[in-house]
Image (cartoon, rainbow, N blue to C red; front, side, top):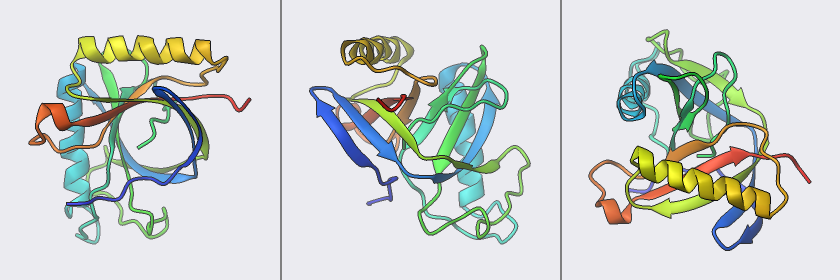
Length: 187
């Protein structure tokens, strides 16, 4: 089943590295605690509750991909283009992009106060795509590779690296599509 993904403009592609420009995006997000795996599961469940009718209008909102996860630093949230991770130990931000027909004005209010709606500004990101599993060791290795690619290409990050996962959990591990994303300065 095809799901909507945020549109972007591919600025540059060099081997494993892509530079993308994303337009303004409307997202639903939640800050959760625990290790990365547990936070991902808990955050997904809260956000799925919102889009599957846990909102003021009891409306269903189409699922999109990816789910972004990043460490959470209070009110600062890094973009991970298309779940996002930023900051303090044990706190994570999990994020869904809303389908493109929605704005903050026409999205139903979440029933759960932990689910927040907001607009992400347009952003340039560096992206490393990879397939397979997203265990902590693998994500750490891929993050090191992304940071090294930034250095090799003379790029400067302006936020934290986030993990974007595109596939449902029943997708065979070897077919899963993942990305690490980091916002970068325009050169």
